[in-house]
Amino acid sequence: MAKRIEASGISAYYGNFKAIDNINLTVEPKSVTALIGPSGCGKSTFLRSINRMHEVLPNARVEGSMTIDGQNIYHKDVDVTAVRRLIGMVFQRPNPFPTMSIYDNVVAGLRLSGVRRKSALDDACEKALRAANLWNEVHTRLSRPGAGLSGGQQQRLCIARTIAVEPQVVLMDEPCSALDPISTLAIEDLITELKTQYTIVIVTHNMQQAARVSDRTAFFSIEKTGDPGRLIEYDDTAKIFTNPSVKKTEDYITGRFG
Amino acid sequence: MTAAVAFANPSLRARRLPKWAPGAVGAGSVALSFLLFYVGGLLGGGLTLTVIAALVLFVIAISIVSRAIEGPRAARNRVVTTLIYAACVVAAVPLVEVVYTLIHKGLERFDVTFFTHSNRNITAFDSQGGAYHAIVGTLQQAGIATLISVPLGILGAIYIVEYGRGRLASTIRFFVDVMTGIPSIVAGLFILSFWVLVVSPHFSATGLPSFSGFAAALALSVLMLPTVTRSTEEMLRLVPDSLREGSYALGIAKWKTIVKIVLPTATTGIVTGVMLAVARACGETAPVLLVAGANDSINFNPFKGSQDSLATYIYKQASLASPYGPPRAWTAALTLVALVLILTVAAKLIARRNKLK
Image (cartoon, rainbow over all chains, first blue to last red; front, side, top):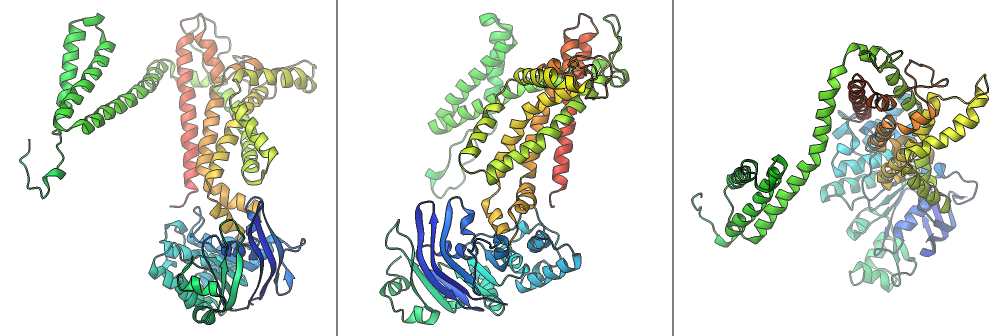
């Protein structure tokens, strides 16, 4: 099910400001790829360009091509909603829909894209909540508001919501930055489990986390404020963290810069 | 004074006035003021002066006492606290007075006849008469105006917040702001010259212009539209972008995100804004008088013939040269306030019922 993502010559702009410049990167299917780098280096922007969420912001645009199994998602005839159904996203802060129950939150993606059958929704809800390791905690109170859960549970609810639509790729934008260590551990375990079915790209500021969960790591950086972010090095996680080939990567990882 | 408890660090202990002190100072100022101004008749005396003098005396006394015992910071705190409470009471006085007067005077004609009969053929010498026709008129006019302005206003706000980019959206936004300040008589004149004089002759059998409740509803919707748009716009802006993004990321189309995620999140606030607009429309007199005329009889058809509303009924009865007019006006005013209150409570209950527990 999982798909390969190939970015070639991706540049992203906010108005006249160029946020990332000419990124070329291939993400392998059924793997976890971590994007690391200092603040403002464009890793989140790049992540958001993978499922065309970047262009949601006013005056934001992307140049270059992003192909999923050979299909360029920036082709003019491509349906944006279909792209996003294929490539789900989990955000930095848990954002369950406040007017919806836990159940409604999980099936929102399916229901609002036309799935009506109750049994199909029930099955999808249970499957997604089990996959997100949340079923045991919430199955007795599915009709309670999703916003009433703890932060870590809310984030797993958002992950369940994302995988309920059965995407092929899951993008995660610092999914643990608002969570405590125990919730973080739960999410990391979950990422390792999800890897067997999905292609995962995760942005993180926590280098131990990148080392723990990812197979491949991409290091982004900027020369100085106002410059666009660039991809400095992209390699196996083990290699990046033990024997990086670029001096700048080594400086960042050892804490001498950024 | 309470006995000194053992304190690890004496400098940390606050020196406070005992709890009964402000009350005692207050009682003292009131007593002094009462003696000097109300009984003694200083500066002309009178109740108002006594109350004001008591407040001033209290502020002076409490600041002196507090400064002596608690220090200057605590004294300033007590003075400002007193002033804030006083301002709150002053702001509430007219409100309480209005409600009291309304109920007190409105109950005189609060009877069955008033709510079941119109004012048809009621002369200055008749004590009966009612406002049934005016209640019907207000409900129909405000109802139609709501049906017109709420969908338009909400859709307009959705355009401004969710779709509008650049010049057009900011221009519309500017004119909505300008429209909020339109005097109601101008809206009435606009509908009079446009609808009543130009359009309505085409719909009447005689070819003559005619007043109608619908014309009043149009004028009211002109007044309601900017209020609804503006308040809905503010509420939509309060919905965090993270919810919209969360929805887009699930592959949900934009319009569906707006209908199913954004609007439900903003419902409570939108309902409040709509009810403010409805309340304003129910109370408008001038435009209704201009375009719906005045009619003491029951007219159930808002599209044909003149129609009263509670507001115009109040206006006419209050200025009637008859001892029976003003009591009718008071009862109609009480009815109008009660009607708006009931509508607001009902709307809030409906909005709350949709919320999760």
